[in-house]
Length: 416
Image (tube, rainbow, N blue to C red; front, side):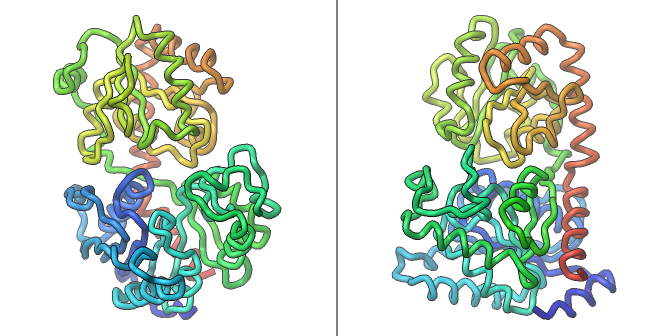
């Protein structure tokens, strides 16, 4: 891998040409994360473009609102490059590599590919080009044999195989192929020529280090957001816009897919049954419109509307039992909304107990209810946690800070 061109650009302070490659564009959690990473590079003045399998409606939303002199070259859809179009694995890889060559980037940042069923071997072929290839770890898919979250399973440390307990869950992989998929990830990221791995939290980084004995280059690049967009608005106005009670305490919760068992929706429903007489529950995400005893708004694909939800609430409750980072926690904090959550995964790196959040001591309904009630009964504490949360986001999780972390990571990968 010849990185002299990139080294020269960095030495002279010249702008880079960055390409993002993923499966579903700006859709869902990982897609929104990619969009925000693009915003950071544009804010720093770089040229940025994207390639994906499916763009989704989110790709048509204007997203660069802060000052910056970067050049956005657009997000191109590659729907024809797919197994369903008659491609074999090698043909898919060749087609994707050719698309990247045509774009002529200095750096290609690869996010999730499994939604398009694009082969991870593509990373190895991109490594042979005269550019820097970085993989971004949104969850645990890049360190296991196939799953995005291993739960209590530790097979990813010693060797995933056909005995995988969740082989039939998304993303599915025939059990006979799981061992080879686990080995492939070691070939991609380990050893002298290992591809740099950026993670979204220290939690994911630590899992990667336990999984890869010879991890070559890895580091945390926390996600950021546009704190000028995600900021509090008048609570009464937000509630009037949503058509919910103005003088009743409101608890907000949600996720992309409420049926995802790791999001702890069964626990949240028990919270609702215990508190529904005293509170109004506002919920976002797929399947939220089907839930009784709550006010569901569905999956809001236009993220620009999300600050209205956060501003309308008194508390944001996250019931995830596994979470690599927690973008909703950052969004809530940026809107000065105190958070109640379990102390799991990357949550604790954002939701800090007694500072901007209350973390339940045990992963059960009773512990969560105790934390919620403690905030409901203390308006001054809610306000203090909310204000501190916004300051944390402005200082540590802004687009500017995210961009700084990305440049530090790229320099480390290029010069070390």
